[in-house]
Image (cartoon, rainbow, N blue to C red):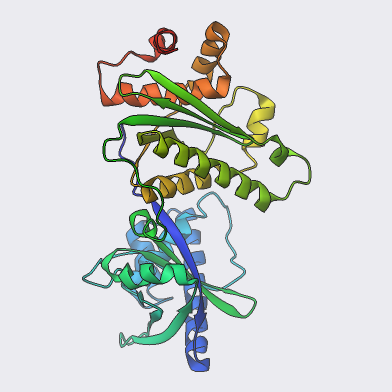
Length: 353
């Protein structure tokens, strides 16, 4: 199974700065915005990465900001032209412990230090404070021991900082019921816009239990987007808690492709699915699992819908529940090559129920 990129979570806070510090930060953010637009333009012209970063130094004279601007420009690779409306600043994570987790934007509790570059190389630091929820303060105090990326934006006359941190650190915020020491079951999930299906399996692939949450109202015309998001997150948390209470240790979800596309087997289902952020929900799932001490796994969902429809036809099992089952069995097959292949999934299910 392909190695998954290490999970991250985002913490947001408002910056408190003096008048002079605000002016210096705004000037730097405008330089950084220009650097991002320049990097995007040069990439479209086919200029090599090394030459782009070298050219960016004439816009914002700091090598790390140049590298960060180039990385930021990559996010707009699909756009033909780029004209950013608002100034911004971004510094990729580098140098855990040795450089306090970030070379140019450093956090120590509520205290923040931001590097202001100068053409003569004599850079300076400005200092301020971060105002955020008290529940995040323990994280901010430990952040210097981890590598984290940081971004700053300007909205409504206020400056905000966004910290992209490891999920392992974010998971320390809340204490949830922990996975039992002797837990060995596998909980597998199939996520859709109006339902989340969960199956609980033993290590030998035997089906123990099925549990689902269905919330069709979230797809109704005019239904508030934020309310729909909260409904899905609540359902996901309840299913994960249920699995933890019933001996689950491994939590299996689908691995999204680069296009973030999932085939539900119907045009209507695909359209509804495209309207909510599956990748965001999976990110929350990873955080929830790790808060509870579980093991988060993702496997390819290729052909899961087709196999699930075969199971539904032969055994009468709900299609979405069958998809969750296929994901769980696929994980076990990857874990142990002796497990039956997908071609024998229906036979496996018959033995399990």
